[in-house]
Amino acid sequence: MRWFQRGLFPESLPMSSCVLNTQLPFPKRSGKVRDVYDLGDRLLIVSTDRISAFDYILPNGIPDKGKVLTKMSCFWFAHLPVANHLLSHELPAEVRDLPEAESLDGRVMVVKKATVVPFECVIRGYLEGSGWAEYKQNQAVCGVSLPSGLVQCSQLPEPIFTPATKAESGHDENVTFEYMAREVGGSIAAKLRDLSLLVYRKGAEIAAQKGVIIADTKLEWGWHAGELILVDEVLTPDSSRFWPSDRYQPGKSQPSLDKQFVREWLMQCGWDRNSPPPPLPQEIVEKTSQKYKDVLKQLAGVSV
Image: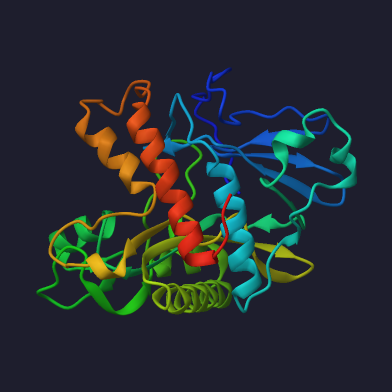
């Protein structure tokens, strides 16, 4: 898991309907969205309602977002044919009697400790975002050559593996598979690629049956007891592009069921992306919360 280190996390974020920060009596590290507590032989991950974009945590959160991320990840961990870090989604005994316990219900995962691989494992099944920008320049994405004539949001002939470095500040940087292989070793890089493609293909197959396209996603892996296991979150609206299948039209941007909705508002509001971001309007907050809840219901069949 990547920890947030740009010094942009606000001390307090007033929004009564959101859980934006947690304080439990255990050693703590905070990422952009998650607070992670060391319970000794395992970790407690708390998904807050914070939302980040363009490497900033936004001033206001998205109600129930953390619960959606937790339920979505737990759904996928149960349905994907790979080892993962999840031990339980119940409040552990150390937490149940604390005053904060009620606010944490539904947004925690107790997980195995793992040594995280220092790369984001990105799988792209469709051409959008930074992949689309790179394709327009050189007809390739992260060193993977693609056919000519593709348009924005085209489905790729096969999903491609396009790793990225995990930057401690600023943006992650897209890299080639060869670069990753030099850093972690060829056999490990190949295993990360194959496992990531397996997760994406299985997830995309399940989602397609429920009317959702998973355009791309980013995964994190870690070492536990000598085994590569899936860690952090998986196939959530924070880490993936979700599109409604019945509205898919290549050649333009797609209606989103994920965080892209917030990114698009930020790109249109006049913010320079080099200063503290503006608060999201209440309408955007409410629509984003509903999108997250809707895609959870559609994919996992559960509500928050």
